[in-house]
Image (cartoon, rainbow, N blue to C red; front, top):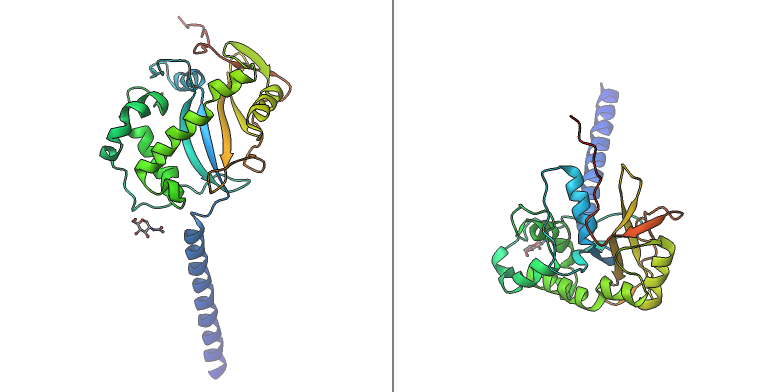
Length: 253
Ligand SMILES: *[C@@H]1O[C@H](CO)[C@@H](O)[C@H](O)[C@H]1NC(C)=O
């Protein structure tokens, strides 16, 4: 009988030990959810973003900026070699009225390409997914500052100007290697280029350009971020489109 009790005791103790360990792990993961290495500032080329949106459904329409310009996707706190952290704090609600003073600028420069949705839904999404993690940085520690910093960064690092200085212009095709080198020559730091792929024609379009900042908002090389330096095919030319690409789908009768 005593033997049995001892066995039971050991069993219960190990159970306690395991559950306790699990809880501690969960706690640690939660606490570390807002730890990150770099801030990725992502700009997107609206004409490619529109193409991707229209690919999802023929009913989709886009909102495009008035001028040919890159627009903001977001500022993303990121750990090396992975995505995230994301959605760091649910107790930081998105408040649309806070952005009222920035609204006209956001509508032009942080544009929600996916027309027809609630005008604040893209900003709300970026806030919950990335902004609530970015609050760990002094300059980004509330909703207004997060969006204002995005606008500031675009002002300083707008890719239309940076690429133009490297003689990379809309309406042309380039090897991704040459675009990466162009960005590096102008900024003196390495960035990342992401492509969209036209399934029907096989054509590649430049979709996003990402540059990286440390936690004091100094521009740094993007080396080490997920899919650095590109997801584009290194051996094919990529298009920097000057109008929304389309597929010329064969209409079935
Ligand atoms: C989340 O935000 C709330 C409100 O500002 C704050 O009190 C809380 O400490 C934050 N939680 C974490 C895990 O940072």
